[in-house]
Image (cartoon, rainbow, N blue to C red; front, side, top):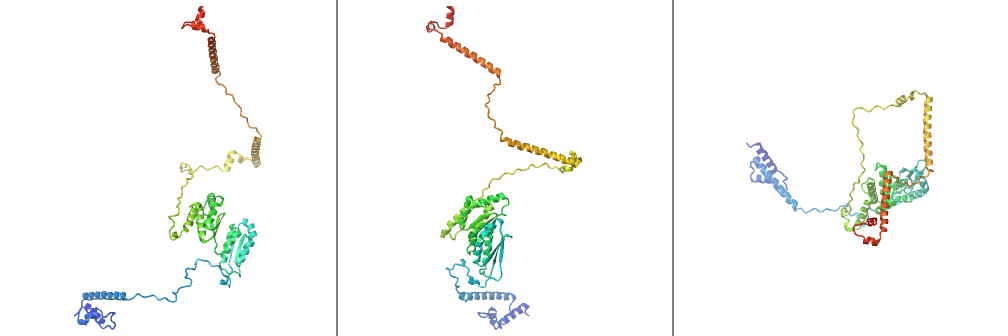
Length: 437
């Protein structure tokens, strides 16, 4: 009797032999073995070897058939045709001017925006409102100036055709409230012009630092601000705690970066101006269009400025006991005895103290007034006084004696006779000779 594994293998081989749909490329290895000897009996190990050989043969046949096949060509369908807008001559970034024929039906709903304005702008807005109203009327937008509530409102009408013009009108009243002149603010209605209002009031805590850094942004005689306007191609206005800018998207991005770095004390505007100037020069070279410009741009390092040292307060020695309780007003009145005085005496004492303070104040003011009429003291030449009179007298006496002795010697020398002085022997004085004679 054959084992169960042998019977299972033979049953599988018999099924493959009588299979009506043999695999592609001819009958497999099992069928070829059965054709040679139908009464063959196989063990489980032989079945596994035959199965592995059959699997490798099928793989080799499939690889050969795939290599023999030609690469499939893709056929273009109706959606793969060239589009009329896929033309290199067309500028896809160009913003076409709005044509009212694109929206002949107008707006379905009314859209409106309002904004408040400060009181100091009220007089100017009253004067320039006809200009604003005329500019918005061309686009079919209604505007209203409410002086009671201090707000400006813009809204669409039935004549409005451009759906985006209401956003432009909202930017217009925002710029007017931030002190932008009306002729400049009206330019925001153009499609090429955009605006950005940068809030800088909440970037710095201390008011002194905020004022100083805002002045850095302006520069002497607004020279820094003018240089930024030229390099970015934007109109910039610094007013209060905001900076209003008008221009292209690229310029507005540069302005916001410079303003925020200045107020946050990251980089001075002068350094940013140098970088912008170098970028403008590098943009002129077509060879550097697709290269990184960081190696050409200067890198500024922030210098640490010495700050004032804060004086540390001397810590008092720690004591576990609480400080003594301060006396109250009642305790002080009890100590001075005023607590037991009547109300009349208290009022009289207060009046007396008030009179004394008033008299002292009057005397002080009178003295200050009279100081202007007091003549200044003239400087006097003081003769230095001799402290030691006795010493000076003795010195004077000795000096006089010495002068008298010198004078007598000089007089005696003048009376000497030249003949007798020559004839006299040496070693003897003329006075001795005269005495002997």
